[in-house]
Length: 218
Image (cartoon, rainbow, N blue to C red; front, side):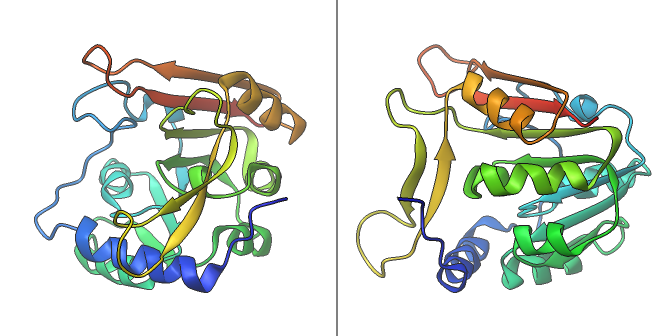
């Protein structure tokens, strides 16, 4: 049975996350992995003139790109987070919109050179619905890049996730986990001409790695 996303409940969850994740003294920065200074940087996006980050969170990556002269747009489900990012990064030129990502992509006509997600919406949205919409928003030859933790062996598909442990109000969402070859197949099925999914090993042996996925639009 497909995961039944409750957008109102998930908005409440991400609003609660925003209250703890956003730091007023944060600086612009771009990192695909969960380890500072580890792994590749924005070069995976190529040399885009315009980008869209889906599930843009604290906005640090968008602010980094905007300061480099890239037209940088972000969409996030949490109105609390979008209010914070809009205020924090007002001087960078980055623009933030509060919306549900599938509705936003389906309702837009604008095309981008790159769409990306860093532990963001690509992790928490059904790829069968998300990937075709992303492809439609990319210019010919545009790239879609996303990162997230790799799947736990034997645990594939939508995975339920509670916020804040296992006590208190039951706030939860779903995240999606697959083997790298399955991610590649999902992307080519959605119309991408090339897809590459790999697990980048952590900087310390035995620690959790990072799934990095890059696909090219026709």
